[in-house]
Image: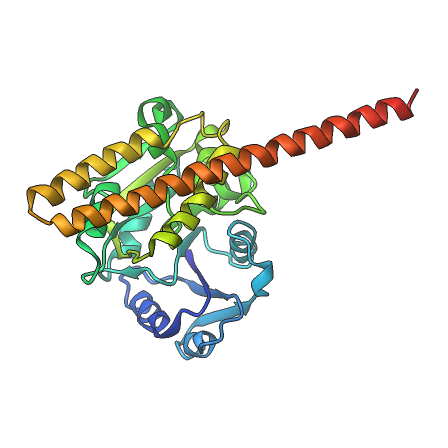
Length: 307
């Protein structure tokens, strides 16, 4: 299986070196590694170029788009499979890439997501969140499972994900321009087109966040906007039910273990997520309404002009 690894970067710092070296040590060696840098100012590009076999291209920071930039990068590679990693993801072992590609032995599978586990220094609630969202169980699904799975049917993350190039191109690639969640949107397109998706629990990377409440709010506002704009494509599968289940699971575990400070911190974290999501949805609903009104006025003007 010929594969290309693509890593978007912005001020990745020294973290880019162990990531690239881990890729060089994989049992299934990538045929090419492409770093797409958005004008880093901390030496990221120089560090990446010091690793043998790594190709680096640069894009203007203001031109970066989660879907468009990744699409352009993929089209500059030629692997049968395209693997996306983020700069803050780190394969746990040398078999990560091999396990990520295994599900493609089923010709129906067009996209595979890897497992994320929190870094050792992550907060206790963040470790539980990752364990809940990325369980140690393989799975495979298609469009017929969307009703049962809800929003989880689309939860492939480009933190660690692989795509079959022919399927990717057949559905038109990532949506762009896009605020975020380009991975969920292409998963929706692939499922709708008749392909299957898979999750490999053995394709594991370290990845976790330590966001402030404000950062969490802003991040989820963007997610809320995306989910609102594309709600029809997501079959109106709301994330609220899944969010409540996550909160109950993590909060009960923290309280059961006597981690009261973490329980309070997680409750505040979830409040920031919820408020951001709701605000983002409200903002996007207003934007859509204004766009529809503008289109309606334009159509009326064209009708009058043709009389």
